[in-house]
Length: 434
Image (cartoon, rainbow, N blue to C red; front, side, top):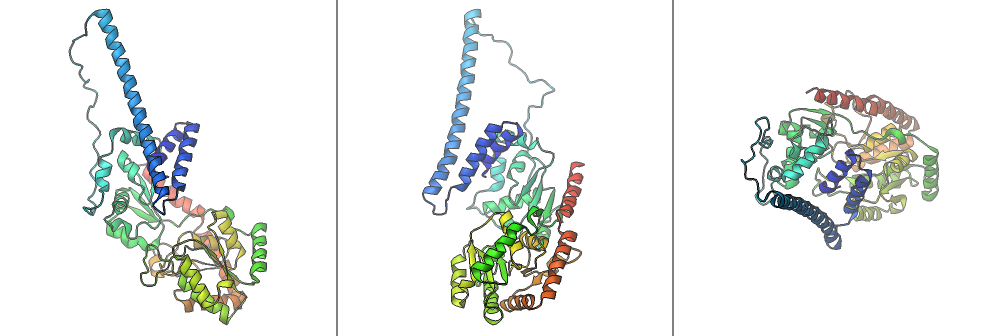
């Protein structure tokens, strides 16, 4: 939800104005759902929605000013009629106890600026006083303000202390000269504390000289991390449909570019596809995979599966909500995540929480500062590694059972919501005392 609508929604919600909150929530969702990908009608419609919102605000402001002007004219007219003159006493003075000066905006650190790009710092400092006051009013209603990624704009406008939550936006974005890069830089460097959820961004945190930061695992909704009658029925359906006895779930976004391998987007899906294809051909022709139809490289992935002769062993599903995703995890034999970055987010922990093996590339050196014990990942980085891990899991039931049990144990010890809650509360208590 974009800022103007989100601000109005939160103001209405914290003031108990339920119908107004519902209205702004609907408007914000409508704005978010408008497809601007083609840059045509959708973009114009979205611009019109924002323009209409601004027009209504300006109209309302003008109406309020006219109303106040009308009342003033009535008062002046009344005095002219009753007294025959306007009082011309001394000009009013501000009482000594009242501070007439506006609250100064704290100086902010410099940002690497591209002269051809908008200036995020100047944009924040030039915020209209009325809007700034609305943001301050909203921020004052919370004991702790925590923002995500580049979301520090509102507390920066209000001058409110805040915490930052990193979710992959600390790798390279703060070092870009774009507007979003500047805003991300300001968010992390001005935060009192940053929660880091990706171990590989430690170097970025040190490069930015963040004043305070700590690692916490990606929190996940644990309500669905178990086998259910629905997941059992889903597995039975997949086995019938694909005539399979071994299912790999690969829900990662399809984005792979061997000639680029950008750390911001790369998933290395081609590495998995090539290893899986060899496993089907050389070891288990009945093996299958479930993949999610999302990402820029979906056409390339489909073409590669056709080229390797295993397209019929893959079922494509649309993006699904978390509860259904966890049902697929519980219904399949293992999860395949990403194969290039060397890190993991919230997908692999869902598999471990379900007691399922997770296969992806993990840069172990980058994660030693985060966990007392590294996770029991099936650590793969090449098609050959993928093939070998799949072969061993399929042919060695004892090994697969041991990995599954170890996955569940590690999740409970080092990644559970109970552990994450305690880490968050420790920081919150410290911030509340300052």
